[in-house]
Image (cartoon, rainbow, N blue to C red; front, side, top):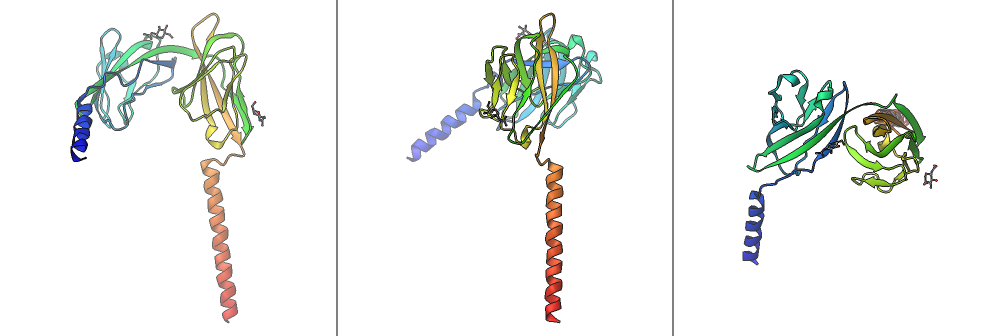
Length: 260
Ligand SMILES: *[C@@H]1O[C@H](CO)[C@@H](O)[C@H](O)[C@H]1NC(C)=O
Ligand SMILES: *[C@@H]1O[C@H](CO)[C@@H](O)[C@H](O)[C@H]1NC(C)=O
């Protein structure tokens, strides 16, 4: 039994030394012209990042980032346009047409391993104004897409995080599990979220493809009425605490009265 345990430990250690080649496959990133976009790195939870080299498809070193430290920008084209988030992911501001293309991040880990992650950036415009939709808790909300768009619709929430793809024939492909059977596609490629809860409130983005052009981004603001937002929940607790305090004081007062 003891030797088995030893072998297991040795195997585990050996696994630690095997280099991880890819952190994630090529990711499609949609960036709206003039806005900002985050290139998010993702490594296994237990792994810690030492530094990240960011290289363009032309082989030019764009920047070096480190978790918890300011990014070092290596290319004038990106001067004043790059910042890093706490995990070393980079945020590119004031997106230009020339930012489109492949960016490769080579991630060096604290344990000596490394892996690479590729971002395929498409620079898009906006499809139109943001659409506001609302429904009650437990109800359904449909994020409508006009029929003039063709091909896949990419759904993101938060902006930049792809969670579903729909097609005009009602096909739907899900990533992640937070919607747990609550998403439906429809004949025009619109997306319906059913059985809404407070957590569903917020901004959604669809990346759409018009017949005659390049991708565009459509924003949706979803409001869920009857949902306690963090603030109103806080106020409710405050009110209840207040009432309890009042009762306690009254009760004590009554008790004091009785004793007198
Ligand atoms: C990058 O994205 C564009 C637009 O979707 C696509 O045409 C191209 O094939 C992609 N390139 C790679 C290497 O994935
Ligand atoms: C939401 O959609 C589901 C599935 O189509 C349906 O069964 C349900 O009745 C709808 N709920 C409301 C409140 O419209």
